[in-house]
Image: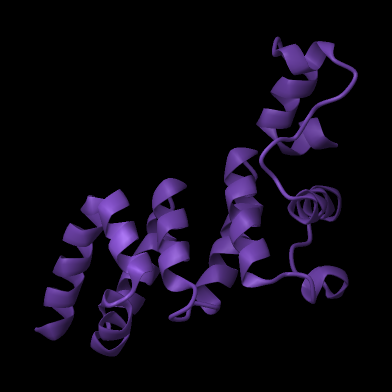
Amino acid sequence: MLAARSPVFEAELYGSMKEAKSSSIKIKDMKAEVFKALLHFIYTDKFDDGKLKHDLSDELVQDLFAAADRYTLEKLKMQCQKRLHADLSIDTVLTTLTLAEQHNSAWLKEKCLQFVSNSKNFTQLALTEEYVQMMQSFPSLLVELRQKVKDSSN
């Protein structure tokens, strides 16, 4: 099932990668609850059903979004994007924007930039250390955000 749903798992299980020759695959850099949610989706094709709904914190959905990108699970990635967009807030937008940039999600990045470019939101965010760190790490986002702010003020 894993190989059928993810080309990455397929390569790890049946390809020429060293993991294919091993009796087990080590999943590094992923929390157990994220991998559990990933497996739940792979086997049920459900992202946000009643069984997991209460466990899907913003942080877990952000991590699941990164995992979906890592394992090329486009349907799960899309569902995570929609959930992250629906839950955008002052507390989550910068982390979500960073994730969108790192995982090549133009749609989610645009939604985050729209949220941040709102003058009220921008005023709150621009004074935070997280904002300064993000802009230092991703200077191209600063250019895009300035353009958004300029466009929204016109």
